[in-house]
Amino acid sequence: MQPISRRLKFYREKANLSPSALSMLTGIDVSVILDIEKGRLRPDMEVLTAFAHACDVSVDELLVFQAEPEIKGPHKDTFGSLEDDTIYFEAPFDHIDI
Image (tube, rainbow, N blue to C red; front, top):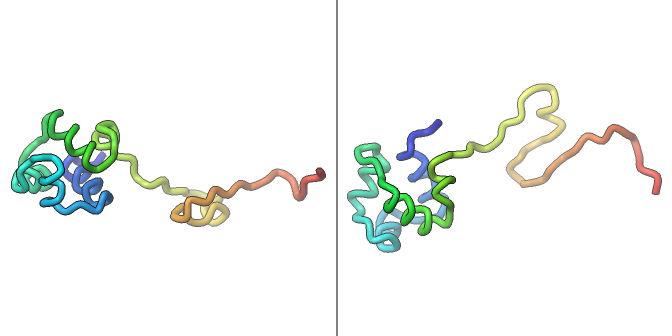
């Protein structure tokens, strides 16, 4: 599991917010945001809530980071890349009669 500091920075960047923009949205001083992202400070629930609201994510998402899924094994090539949000299925049949 990634430290909270990395998760907060990840979601701030994902929301295309600079530390100063996040500061303006949340009222949290830029130096505090940077100290949290560097692991020097631990955020309390009030800070997490403000951060989540500004980044348009839930507090749960901030606390439990979900990495991109990785397909391993013999079916990796069958499924292709997950970056395009396309879902691929292997059908147990050759064709469908309608």
